[in-house]
Amino acid sequence: MINMDWKKNIKGVIFDLDGVIVDTAKFHYKAWKALADKLGIDFSEEQNENLKGMSRMDSLNYILSLGELQNMLEDDKRKLAASKNLYYLELIEELDESDILPGTMNWIQECKQNGIKISLGSASKNARRILDGLNLTDHFDAIIDGTNTTETKPHPQVFLLAAKALNVEPSECVVIEDAYKGLEAARKGGFYSIGIGDPEILKIADINLTSLADESMDVLEQL
Image (cartoon, rainbow, N blue to C red):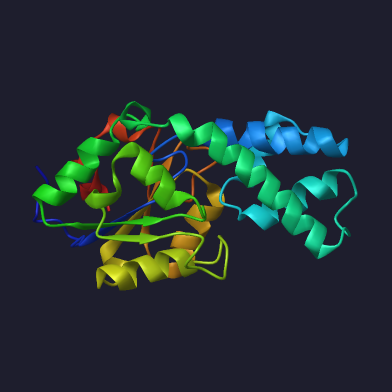
C-alpha cells in the first residue's frame, strides 16, 4: 500500500500507452516498414525508435524524409497514413489481456485502492480500440488520445488535458512514459514523471524504472 504521508501529495497518474501498458511498437514497425518498402525507402528498427511519441503524420513525414519524399502532396500523405493504419489495425486485432505489460495491472489496482485517479495520455488515435482489446477501458477515469489533441509531444497538451479531465493539478500528477519526448512534455507541463526503459536515454525522468514490474507505487516516495 502507498504511504499517504508523502511529501508530495499525488492525486493522479497518467499512463502513456505504447511501451507502458502494451507493446505495440512491433506492430507499428511492421506496418511502417511495409509502407516504406512499398515506397522504396530503407527503414530500420533503430530508426523506428525515433517515432516514439510522434503522431501518425509526423511519423510518416519522418519516414518520407528518409527517402527525400517529404514534399509529397498532403492528400497523398493522408492516403499513405490511412493505408498504414489499416494494416496496423489488422495486426493488433489479436491483442488481449495477456499482452498487458508486467506490472501495469498492479499499478492500476494500487491507484484504485488508494483513491488515485488514472488517465491515459497517448498520441495514438487507436488508443480506445487497443484498451478495449486489452479489457482495460473501464479502469480509466479519463482517456485522452490523438483524437482529442492538436499538438504532439513534446508539447504537454495531451497531459494537460488529462489532468484537467481528472480535475487535478499537473503538480499533483505523475506521468509514466517510455519516450524522451513524452518525458519532455511532462516536464514542460509541470508534471512529475517516471521513465520506463533505459535510464541513460530517459534520464530527465524524476524516477527511472526498466519496467513497472520493478517497483510498487511506494517508489513515489522518492518524489
